[in-house]
Every structure is written in C-alpha cells, then in structure tokens.
Amino acid sequence: MEYRKSIFYSIIKENKYIITIKADNRDLTKNAKFSYLADNYVSGESDIVVVNSDGFEDDDYVLLGEFGTETTEICQIASIVTATHTITLDVATKFAHSQDTKITIIKYNQVRFYHTVIATFSATDPITGYIDLQADNFFSLGYDTTNTTGFGWFVFYNETTAKATSASNPIPYADFSAYSVKKILDSFFSLLNNKELKLINNNDAFRWLNEGYSIAQNELNLINQSFTVPSEVTITTASGVKEYALENNFNELISVTNENGNRLVFIDLEDVPRNNDHEGYSITSVRYFLRGSYIGFSPVPNAINSFNVYYKANPSILTSYYDNVTLPNNSFYMLLDHMMYRAATKTNKPNPKQYEDSFRTSIETMKVTSHKQNENEDSWDISPTANI
Picture 1 (tube, one colour):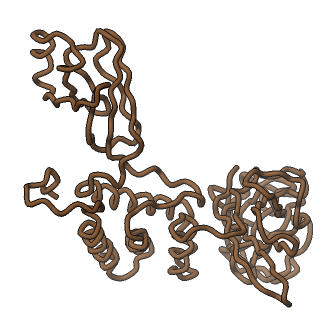
Picture 2 (cartoon, one colour):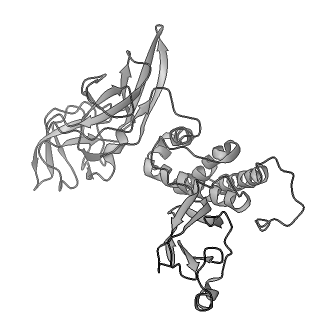
C-alpha cells in the first residue's frame, strides 16, 4: 500500500538543523469500515455501544472521532458483543465522546520514519522507533537530527500483528521544485480551512490537478508547435501491414519523414482504398493517413522502411509528488485556480465560478506569451494554427 500524502519541512532549533517528516494519518481512514456511537460517554469508559458493530473484530484498532481534533483518540478492541453492538476496549477512553461520534477501524496504530542516501528504500537506517500515531493532528511527525541530505520515508505499523505498510514515496531533504506536484498540492491544501480539509482528500486533489493540467496543455497545443513535442519516434514498416500504433500520449501530428528526410504527403482516409488500388508502393511516393490512435501508409508497404514522426503530446498523468508540471513561463501557478474551482463546488463555497474565470484568463495569457518561442521574426502569412 502506497501513501502519497508525505511531506516535510525544515527548522532550525538551538543552532541545529532538524528535518521534520510528516506522515498523513488520514490515509488510514480511506475506505475504512466505520460506525457511530449510540450514546454520550464521559472519559474513562471501557464499554461503548455503537450503532452497528458488523465488521468490527477483537484486537482491531479504532479511531474515536476524526484525525486533527483535540479529543480524538485511538483505542483497541478487547471484545465485542454483537447482539448488543457493545465494544469493550483494552484501555478506557481518555476523553468524553458525544453520541454520533464516528468510530473507524484503522489497520495500523504506529508509524516509523527512515532515512536513505538515495531514492531507494532501505530499512537499515531508521531515524525513529515505532511511535504512536498522533490522533489529534492530521499528521504524525518524525524528526531527523543527524542527516541534512538524502531522503526520508515512513511506514505505518500494527503493533499487535507486527504488519507494516510498504514504504511511502521518497521525501527529498533538498526540497521539491516549485513546479512539482508536491509544492502545488501544498499550496492548494493551504487555501482550505479545517472543515473543507475533511471533505477533500488527496485523490480529489490529484484528479483536479490532472484535469487542469490537461486543459492547459491542450490549449497550449493549439498555438505552439514545439513545446509539448517529445523526441522523434521511428516507425518501421513490415510488408503487408498498413497501420501502426502511435504513442499513448499522441495529441497532434507535426511531421512524417522518410529515410531520406523527405516529408510524406497526407491522404484523407476516404481516398486510401483508391490510392491502394492505383498506386504502387514506393518510399518516395507513399502517403500517410491517420485513424484514431493509428498511423497508416498508402499504398500498403511491401518492404521494411523507417519513417520518423514528430507529434504534439498530451500531458502525462501526474501520480507522484516527484512529478513536475511542465508549462511555459511558470504558468503552473494557474492550476490552483482550477483546483479551487472544483473544491468550491464540493464544499459549497460562494461563487466558485470566480476561480474558473481566473483560470481561463491565465490560459489566454499563457497562449499569447507562448505562441512562439524561437528567435525568428513573426510571419505575415496565415499560420496553420491561426484558428485557436
């Protein structure tokens, strides 16, 4: 199991550099079984009744309340009377809990932090022991007072079963770049209040960031002929095979050239059958066509030849804090507006459209400032990308 909500910051304390690593406790409650207290309870209670005890078992750890609340605590189940939905806890509660307080099963009750020199996990250098989760905080913290470079990691741990999660993503001590997913998500979550943070999870943030990134790059593709173009791709034909799969991130074709460097002429799909019937295959006269995510050649190749393809790419899907957003002129800042627009609709913020309007305005500015990046003078001819 991989936990992506792992972030860090650095502080100076008593002239000593300390790295603080954060593990997001809220990851443990995603898709977890939960119920609610059926009555009000003062502190020091060992027996509690829940609305529905189905799915709860002896030795399970449970979260009473929500992470980040002062009176939230983690307890362990000693036994259950399913007929009455009564749960007996190993240790009495520390705080009072009102009726309808959420009680959630969590698979782990501790966390441990590690350090490595390179971005490959190893358990040989732990910087903490197994420490109890800090239930009154969104994050559990680990401190490294020895290392100032390298990478931090954490794993969640079940003290009873001795089972642990897989390691988190590597957390660089040198910090993430300003245009990394990590920094963008940090900025996004900092704009939300505590109530809104309970409604929006990390999956929401990644989805909205990817959506905004896709919109921005597709708009950029309309007016810029080079920014999103990856390295040249070579397609090698086989005799009798007319179509070949394009790259998964294909957006728009820029050019197709043969082995001699000559550009191929495009042919409409409707003209392909006639061209196949009346023309003989030759590397100098063959044409290309597009059909969905495939490129084809007409007439059908009868030899092994190589064709070089340049194309505009769709944005890659951002899945890790390590991923970087690639947009010209530091335009990544505008993605926060789209994310806030989506968040506003989910949290019922007033006038969510203001965020999307700001996002669209920034896109137009990006298009104006990034339509051409080479040093050549502007042409007075009609550009093939004039229709934007």
